[in-house]
Amino acid sequence: MLFSPSGISECVQEWNDLEKDYQHVQETHRLYKQKLEEVSKLQESCTTAITRQRKKLKDLTVSLEECKEKLNPEEMNVIDGIQESIRDRPNVFFEMESFLPKKNGLYLSLVLGNVNVTLLNKQSKFAYKDEYEKFKLILTVILFVFSFTCRFVVSYRALDALFNFLLVWYYCTLTIRESILISNGSRIKGWWVFHHYVSTFLSGVMLTWPEGKLYQMFRSQFLTYCLYQIGFVQFLQYYYQSGCLYRLRALGERHNMDLTVEGFQSWMWRGLTFLLPFLFFGHFWQLYNGVTLFRMAQLPECKEWQVVMCGCSYLALFMGNFFTTLGVVYQKYMNNQDKSKSL
Ligand code: COA
Image (tube, rainbow, N blue to C red; front, side, top):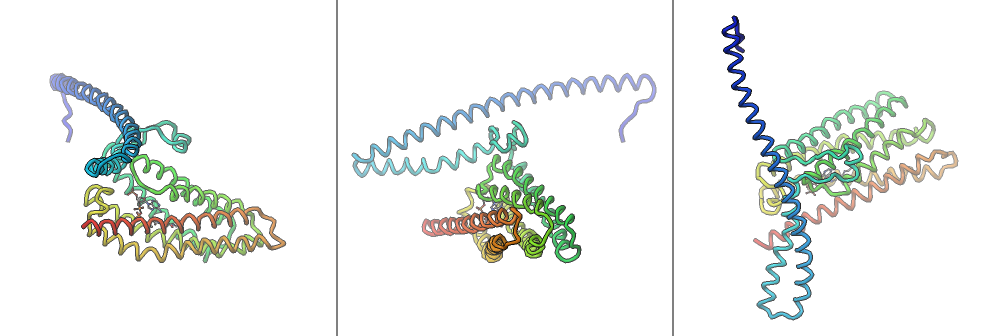
């Protein structure tokens, strides 16, 4: 319990103690500001040094290629060694830059203005990513319940509109959070972020699709797809992604350890093999949605522009998701092969 003075002498005594403590607070704060300035200067000099290094390494790479033509085998070995080290540098600089403040990209500048979004330590970065995964999980549950209600309980256009509005908001929020994650060193592939822009657009178009025969024709297929993709598959994805996050955090550095920790590798492959059939099934469902919508667009009673727009969006989602996922699996497979060869 806090001491509360009674009587003038205790009050004066308390004031004197507070005065001493106040001096201490001022001194600590002065030191804090001084350190902040030092940190700002260090950040600036690191950023400048990295830019300089990048430029010089680029020039050196060109010069080395030119030298290669007239060298003996011994000198070639030296050059190979240098080139090997140069190849590692972009990764190192990428990790370094994830701890340095940088100018926001166009999207973040438009949404947030020019505020610094770089988190300066690993714990905060982990906490932010963890919160992003939990946010997706909570919204997955809400959207699952919502789509289930629309599909099986209540058939009411206004409720569908509310569901689509929630989707627009959800995907918009994801694009902002993912841009912040990328600024903090996350290696999310550009497509996944772009996929959320396309999904925002698609949900926005669905929101404006007026009630009518065509809307009713597509409604059940759309809601069942949402139940599967946004509810079920996203839940599996959450299990996999958060599993990766916690395991890699326990191991230490994510990207450097990716290729070296066998226990993690085998867990990841087991998770992926389980997840991939469900992912691919979802991708082909997107293709099926696209084809259904294009077929509907051929009908004489089709007057709504939303049919073709949604069809195009589903086709874009199918192609992007399918080929990016194949690319990710291929890349992981090749990394695994390289690792086995080097052992
Ligand atoms: N959305 C958001 N972030 C993603 C992502 C996605 N679909 N896929 C990968 N990432 C993130 C990872 O969390 C990781 O982040 P980090 O650098 O901050 O740790 C980074 O991107 C690199 O991940 P990577 O190693 O390439 O892949 P992974 O092993 O984490 O996941 C898949 C691989 C195939 C499971 C994943 O890409 C995926 O789920 N793809 C399918 C998504 C899809 O088709 N959705 C359908 C529409 S909802």
